[in-house]
Image (cartoon, one colour):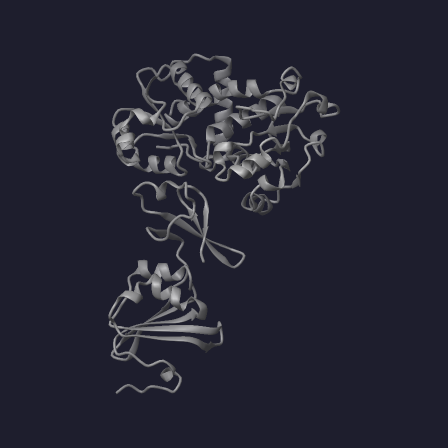
Length: 150
Length: 300
């Protein structure tokens, strides 16, 4: 049996799967939606408003028997670039990394410009990720307009 | 293979090269250097000036034009995607000149096509040949492009010509005066762009405020087709009207530019003053478009 510290017990451990840590507390529900976690049967443990030195208040999502591809993590990065991804195998952290902000996002998110060609033709959206005044925006490769992320 | 979709696709050196080539074409309007070439002119929305100017440029260069000026007579009306239309046309021609109401459509077309694409306007987004002819007109009237003060007047919110001209003139140490009603002010993103480059600008709502402080008075029409709210259009449609009597005391070298068509923003009595340059500006479009086409096809 794994040695579980009191700190880790704040949210119950999983045997295999992914732990997404350091999600801003107010972005946890959005993260669940973005990753499609509201529509799967896997065991999911959610912690919200946990104390965090860096964020003040953070959220954590533990998903049993689920591993994410880079596209999904890029999607999450848009709202939680400081998120840490922990891959758990047999109760141990097998891999751990920060997701960081991708430079380009393809095929995700809609362009906010109703006259953008991507909203009228069967075209994959393509954005450069830009940071401004602490907010993340997506610069459309096609119409050159900026979509601000909620 | 290079296309011209956005003015940002051309470096300062390429812009200056195009303007130099345009000068040559102005001196000698007929140079059949593209004999045997076929160029598609695909106008998915109406445009008189731009289409005629591009098609004249193609003809004067000795190439042939195919295409349409109204998409309702094409397979587009049957639901054909833009991708399929471009894939079909690209097999027939050496270049595609395209105007389309959707923003970003020309960029997309350039990714599908196997020949150069020239954006002749994609909705309210970009119209780079207009920007180049504006630059050419500034250069021809002022003798140079460096350190020019440009007073942009009218619809600075939706007017793509002002946005692209601002981007292009940022290469040349320009100063800007933005004259617009509150509802149509220059969008923040363009002011941020100027700030990031350390370029000076001032904003005013009064046309008279800085009429005497500029080398170029760049008038624009308030474009009804860009408004989604008709009430907003009604409020601002006649916000400025330039008359000859207002031009007392302006700089001697000052010239008035306008991308045309005009409605009420320039009175006809201005046409006969030495400051009016907008009809010559439209003529310049021919030489600049000849230069763009021959450059992209590797002939100049």
